[in-house]
Length: 273
Image (cartoon, rainbow, N blue to C red; front, side, top):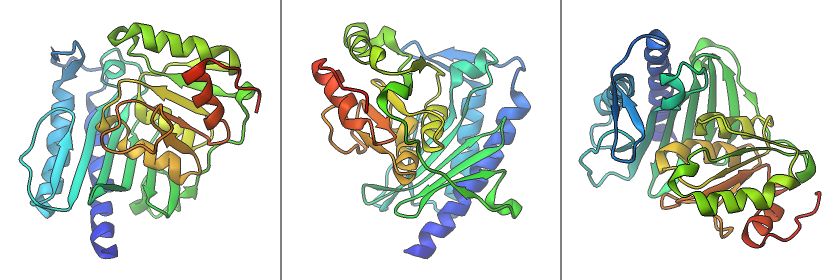
């Protein structure tokens, strides 16, 4: 089992590197854009990046299942499933905003065991393995540079920097109601429009809280594992551990998690700790 995971980890890292090159090489260039049914946008670069990841996976593990944002793939009876978002932050990418990245997660028998996030413009690769911690590589593990173990922050609620779901238009009332309950209890609020950036920043201790209502599994599979392996916590809005069916989630440094849940669910004062 260890060998099977190690081999796939190598594929995930290689895929992230090659997709990163595609994203950088086409950034700020004219690209074809299409609108999807939910009014979100997809570009030819999303699709090219997806093809590269799928090609690398299928060349080595043709029976592995793949769940991706852009296309559906045939399923098999394999215990392994890859969950990929080739370009997270597509709208940023289109607008030439320099916050975007790639997410690649690996699931085994329904449990997330590996997560890779790559932010190509900063050349930061985040790696999480179940029960083995979270690491940041300034470059790639294959470059010979050692990764450093990363940890979530220890800040309390009144000092929290929070990131929040930017897809307010999809369900305005509950999203704005929850924001109203929590925004006065934290230090400040940001919206960067990229789940991989939000969640890797929590794992690295730069941000303390992320609240999302409309993310899909490919948006958060690698990122929530990264947060947990960095010592943080991730649950749905009922406080239950997240899984592949989770629709909305709270990810935090763990210290503030219960108070955030109470605040959002009831509106009661969460206190300062």
